[in-house]
Length: 251
Ligand code: APR
Image 1 (cartoon, rainbow, N blue to C red):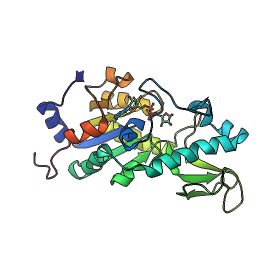
Image 2 (image 1 turned 90 degrees about the horizontal axis):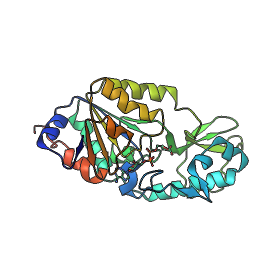
Image 3 (image 1 turned 30 degrees about the vertical axis):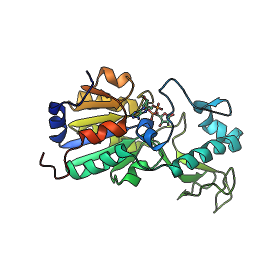
């Protein structure tokens, strides 16, 4: 059902939830100035290549410079970005609900910067790198990078961002935690995702099967709209603060 506005009944159902899971996608960071991958009628290209071609292991192997230029550009955009009211509302909800799990497809780290502590990064983090040769994993926040492509400080091997590239699997342990949080929540929010990339796209269906109230927040209809109990058409930074329970939690 598509709602034009947030009703009192919806606010009450939200407030009374016990265990909450929030699945987020690129749309939650739009109001921080981070572009999406899809939606709004456009898709990003880098040097004429669609992101599905650039963000692949094959690209890293055949053209590490172009591959890393794309990630260096994204690191620059994201470093400039600040968490927006949507990230902050979700972080504040941790204090109200008995359990709150953020399941994000984003690699920007903005949920954590807003103060969320329980965040499952399905697609990894742009702020970690991994050596293709020795496997060393480390945090790397250098912007700009001193060299493109960057190399491992330990063995000199080529580094890759510690993100899930197209064609790669989501880390099993993270996904099973996401499944557990989804299957046991009573309120499942889907915010700012086109919900076409699996396995994340399967989570709203799982929540619904387990009888959670499914609320979607997105300016456009998506495949989730068909199964959501409620779709709030609009921007996350405007809608999520309106759903927020009062700080003292007494209503
Ligand atoms: N508030 C909420 N949603 C918004 C906003 C906003 N202000 N602006 C745009 N959106 C919505 C769009 O309507 C679209 O449905 O955000 C969604 C963004 O969709 P995608 O760009 O496909 O992002 P996402 O679903 O996170 O993509 C999944 O695909 O390319 C890969 O690994 C990448 O994690 C990413 C994955």
